[in-house]
Amino acid sequence: MCGFVSLYNKYRMPVDANILQHMTDSIAHRGPDDEGIYIHDHIGLGFRRLSILDIEHGAQPMTNENKDIWLVFNGEIYNYKELRDWLSQKGYTFYTDSDTEVLLRLYEDVGIKCVNYLRGMFGFTIWDQRSDLLFAARDHFGIKPVYYSETASGYMIGSEIKTLLASGRIDREVDENALYQYLTFQYVPEPLTMFKEIHKLKAGHYLIVQNNGMTIRPYYEVKFEPHESRSYSDLVEETRSVITESVRIHKNSDVPRGAFLSGGIDSSSLVGLLHRLEPTQTFSVGFDMPGYSELDDARKTAAYLGTEHHEIRINARDYIDILPSLIWHMDEPVADPSAVGLYFVSKLASQHVKMAFSGEGADEFFGGYNIYREPYALRMFQGLPGPWRSLAGHLGRLMPTGMKGKGFLERGSLILQERYFGNAKIFMDHEKSKVLAPWLSEQGVCKPTQQVTKPLYEQAKLYDEVTQMQYIDIHTWLRGNILMKADKMSMANSLELRVPFVDTKVFELAATIPTKYKVTPTATKLLLRDAMKDVVPPDVQQRKKLGFPVPTRVWLKSEWYSWARNLIMTADVDQWINKTYVLQLLEIHKEGKLDASRKLWTILVFILWHQIYIEDRAYSFSGPSSNRMIL
Image 1 (cartoon, rainbow, N blue to C red):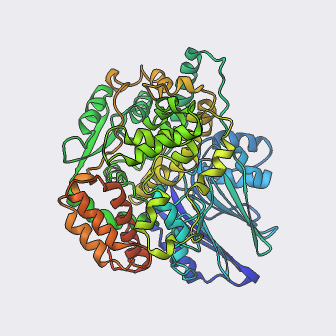
Image 2 (image 1 turned 90 degrees about the vertical axis):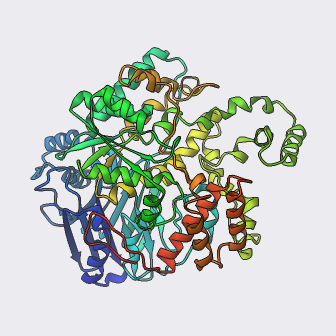
Image 3 (image 1 turned 180 degrees about the vertical axis):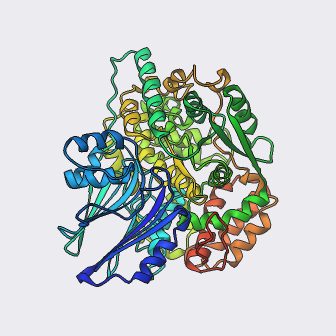
């Protein structure tokens, strides 16, 4: 893991070395081991390195023999040895054992088509002096972030938003459409960010800057192609084989490594497979409240597998004290409470290893979320005429909040495109007029939430409903929430995190599994569980999914109540948020009339982000690097 920044000044204006250095320093936490700067007239490349492969010889920016191609690269290329052998046979000479040099040589040989050969997680920029071309790319599923911005001066690309802000070229303005979508998704869906002038490069896309202009194109497309004729037993064997091979290539590194362990099927499978290859250290996190911790389950799994196990327990004060630092690291608001758990388990792991495995992606690829069972539960509504479905929804809305069956009728009255926007659905559009300032609720100011998912549903229209839900999550939830918090929370602790489930070969296999082998009316990840039954403890196979549960519901009524009320009242967000409504929501939650914890948390995270990045409140941020930006 590393971090980079790239500048392309328009009209050949020379790059200011001080500005480039300041931008590079802002992400010192991503690479505390080394740094590098390269400037050539109007081009500037900055790099911070966390040494994982070829520790002595993998410095960046890296160039070729002619010094006319330069590369800065964040991530890992897992098939770099095969690519190296292939390129060596074609006559290329290698001077290091790093995947960075392989990527550089690959670009020399095939140009921008290099992305089609890569298996890994990556964000990178290549400057080709021969054609004055700046080329940037992001990996297939969005494991590594890449941000870009165009200003009057030129183009900027970086691993984190704070690198671009450090240039001094960007006005810190909230994007109202991003805020509007954030209130539904609890993160800002790509390509938007919460900053009006900064965008995310979409997963599976590349970017070219040339002749003072920019073009963005896709190079990878997610496709499900179920093989209905394949036998269940054959698919079980192939799934076990493919995941085992992914674990094997993902462990390639020259540093100590371990794995996160929650006690569920995903992390337990990775730990079981990794521990078969080498002695493994495992790391777990939990909260000091009954029902909100998987530490006991993780401890039992670690004992069964025989790993060297470490754990950490968090209380309400630990959580709230570190929150400003986490939001600074996240760059923009991501209102997933479990991000704090990821931060603390990353911090724990970084004290023992430099690289860790984590189980992200298994739910999206293999059908692991309980919500994927909903199409079976709502099947009775599909045959109803439109007016009858509308009547069911009307009856549901008339029922009191909390009454059994209310949500069932409301959701059953809607088609999938109307009810499913991904794993998080905090505020629906009709609710946002209450929480947003009046001008934002005016017709035409913000785009409806369905504008985000409508093109995705169009692309997935031939799939069954469960697969459509997977498709939506892979393009939204996985990229914007799951992988975003994994990258930012691990990098906040200078820890490389690898996610073997989020792999092109694993997805190629997962995409062929028929829905009936993934999700049933009573089970999720059916085939994956059977594939891993000889790898994990017997009780793990059917263990209920928790996934770093956080007692925000309880703490907002007690330990956090005063903090939350004070934050709302003192924040300068009246332009965006109806604070009177939010305070009322907090009181309703405290009194136990309604569980508004997810809605409140989404607003509170935005307010805190606004204080840090827009209001420029003075928070100090602790971390592994002594070179920390203070806002």
